[in-house]
Image 1 (cartoon, helix red, strand yellow):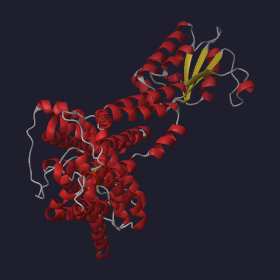
Image 2 (spheres, rainbow, N blue to C red):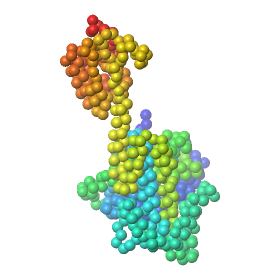
Image 3 (cartoon, rainbow, N blue to C red):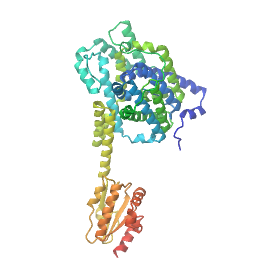
Image 4 (cartoon, helix red, strand yellow):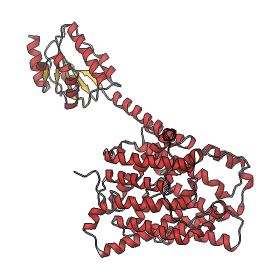
Length: 545
């Protein structure tokens, strides 16, 4: 049995070698180079200054690797948080974001301590695909302005995705052809470069080429330095002023951040497990994610989680222990101190191009299309509704409504598959497995879970006038709830009014426990609870005689 909290670094160090150290150092260096432009771009997409993305990758990346339940998971800022973080910053400022991040971190620790790691699997694939695709579209819409070099009219309020789309259409006449050219060059490099080299990330080449073009030819394009003040200072500790009102207001956002962090980090762990033939500890990983997010918030960062692409790059470049993740954080720290001021030269269209590629890689459009073609209609409805609500409203609404729809549709599906049918007296006509029935005995076979959504199936039960014994065969009833138990009492009372004896045959463990707690077994009589249909038919014959 796994311990709730046992960092993977403990096991990794038992068999560590100098050869593995070299591999981890190389992998950590490469992942840091990949993470650098992504962290800056994701910070900007989240509505915060560029260095906060680096802070997040350093602080959260270090603590999550040190304490995590995966050998190779790399954590930092991810695109999944961009929309929700930007919304929090606009409504509640940086301090509100810090409070939400701290609350999310506490929630993640509690989720790990309460062993919720395995519960993440109960979130349907349709919902994760829906909101992931929705987030990708919101990122694309949010970056159109910088990619095309548009200038919004003074006083334009473009916070929500739909507002941004409207502002883009209203500003198409302000297109900057130089910005578009630089953006297209960056996009071309991002698309073509992976065919040239797998070792050096295309995003870094796009940043270097784009900055060089703009600087050398003095092209009139906005750079990071034009819009943001760049700081190469080390992250400093700062505790926010927390009030009860802020906690209540930010609770839904914090819950969404915690759920997203849990889902993304554990998905990343599952993917990496398959790549290195290992098995992560999900509860340890949740606790580590919680600790990482708390420290990220306290040291000026934004929410963090496991990054699947960076984790895969870590594995492909030889990373096999948490040391590579720690090295990645330390390398980013050196870059922050030495090279961060140079980030001011990065053109905004290049940042937009990088985020376009991030959005494309995360959108899961193939999975989206496949689900629309092959999934049941109810699953398609959940998928599309979650997607639309993510774009039109926000993740909190999308996940809540998506989960409610998924649960309702699942209950309906289960209720539709639950049947109560009577055995025919001539078994050969309908089902040869049915046994020959004595006269004046009715066998009702219940197939499927009996719960509040299917409990009305009992209302269809009818008996012949001369029936003396009714047997409820419950071999295929895996579960029973209070509403169905109440309806069973109705059946029992109806039998008593007609002087009919009720027998129960082959009751499964869970339904039996519910019946005993509800005193239904004592009402029916312990002697009328039989282990199988054969025994029940023998007892029924005695009652009839």
